Image 1 (cartoon, rainbow, N blue to C red):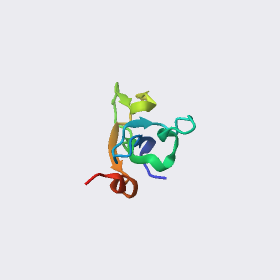
Image 2: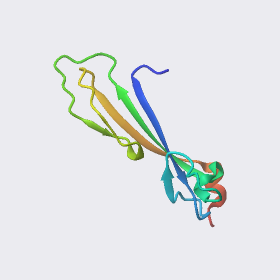
Image 3: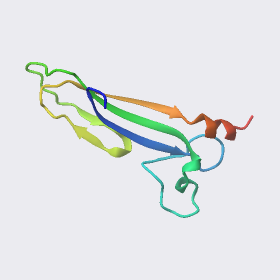
Image 4: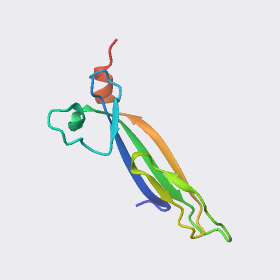
Length: 103
């Protein structure tokens, strides 16, 4: 969809004690019936990992980087002459987290 974007991964921050802050990060639901981290309604934050690649190959570029994608593990460099960079950010889900904050 976007030129140069190679990978996009998500981690979900679940609020397990109803205070509006993420207590545990998971790649998806825990799978344990009745647990707070097994309900999408308890997601109060999303951590994103994005690997961007240069549009053109760079002559003689050798990439020895390993990219850390959090709970998803690591991705080794492709060593194909393209420069890459990992970007990460945390996004708060305001409609859920804000309503749970204590004054």
